[in-house]
Image (cartoon, helix red, strand yellow):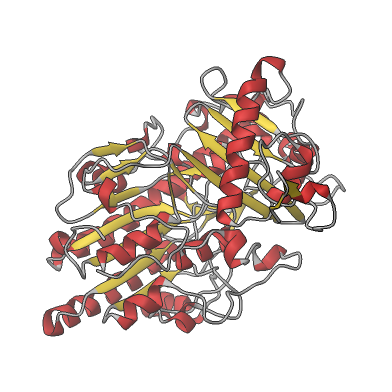
Length: 506
């Protein structure tokens, strides 16, 4: 356990489908994120922060449990579920239950989406029950919020969508919202968070009961539905298109071209792509402003010095990169590398860390801050040593996984400093060199000169999956050069392949 003071208050700020390059602190020239940039300047910015899987429910279940998706087995979103479990098994460890057992107030305002029948309240979170994947603008508590303040209802125009392969209308990607900012769902979430923060601050003063409070925005997940001042905040003519908009899908798994058609990219002019990127950046700016209201409340209540603050998201977003939108069965940096900011009491200001870390690591970090043994978060490692400026030994690569969205589609990824390997059992594997190809346009998996890299990374990924107990390794055992096999690959125990030097190794 870290030397950090036990029972620290924790404010956990989370967005949905958020690109790292939308923040000024991550180098964006087209950003208006002063609040999050200030958080980065006062704490630690992690430059290699990855999601365990680029899809909402599995990633959020991993945060809740500290388990990789293959282990907790909640592998798809309810809305597109293809037969996977929709809720964590009874008795599964969660950090929120551990916090409550140790005297913490625990609240969650906003998007849950970590299960279907078991909601946030089931696990012990205070706050309104807000189900679903997008802003539930018909929710009774939001409607009451509008009525109490005499604010106008949700109404949109200027819808942006393409045309599906079958000729039907594509998914709504963006629209203009005819509400003032204070009427938006984002403002409602910030208001409810501040109200709960005030309650927790009062109980903290009266009884020294610490708190964990999580604010989960539904955005900037598409559709980007925002008011005029944010819809038009950035000039599309000033938008620099991602280089990967030149994607040809040559030498790539065919599913990527199919997903591009599903997201109707080629049915819209490139000017529309520029506008979508501009609106997405406006959405991020609006959320930053609402986070600012919460941070001001933290300051007003005198909680800054005793409260750790996290900012991250569940996964990224394509917004036209690789001629794609949303997320899906393509393990590009756009959706796997995300922003990750952490400020802990007494930690250094303006620190930048380059270790490979994961959303999964937040679970152990939360427990560590609370003075609770993080061991039950079995696939998580506390970030406190990094956030406090220490130099611990750290793994020099990271494994990510995917199991499907509209259909089952298993993938595993190994990302290291220069290279990324993606194993796709259905078709071609992928290998990218970030020195020569930072935009992941050229798949060099079958290039002869890459054979040593491919072999080394395949064997490394195989060993890591074996160590974790991720049975995806069985496919790799028979299909690729995985090095020495120290187990019975046939699982039969019936022939000489199960013996080495006369000893049974099954």
